[in-house]
Image (cartoon, rainbow, N blue to C red; front, side):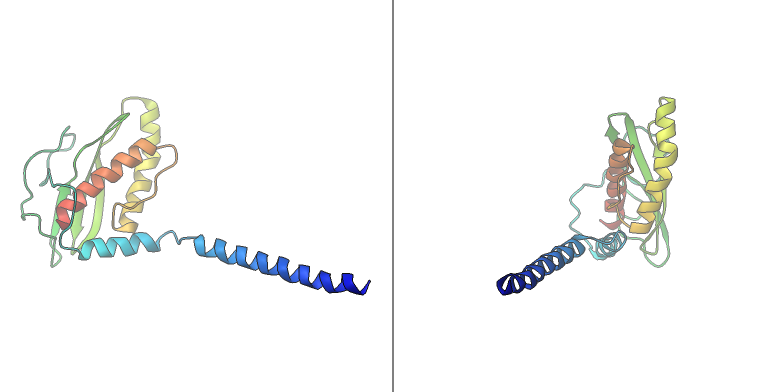
Length: 175
């Protein structure tokens, strides 16, 4: 009987240790929702070059233009400084359900406006999906200050196209 009592505390210690280690590993694997986007947005604004995507469009093309134009931006691609607003249109991202294109406004180095100027509207389902997805994507982009935004469930193609066009526009602003 004496030998069994000695083993039980050891089992409890091993079980408690394993539980504690598992809990610590789970807690460390969690990532905060807003911090990475804000940190990445700040680092992207601080980098002067290194953008891998070419700047193919700029200026302010009319809404509904179907392809990225070859015009260059008015300020030569320099980041907006001193509170001057700069509006740039991203390249059109072709998705399975249609093109997605966004226009961004950067004021004083901060993303202040994101507008979807082209998105799928062919049928009522497209309109329903985009009526809830586009406002969420806009909020995410303004909060993150970058194109590193979460996908909207049920609008994967629109979310992917939105990210691609947004990254293209930001590359033009910061490149």
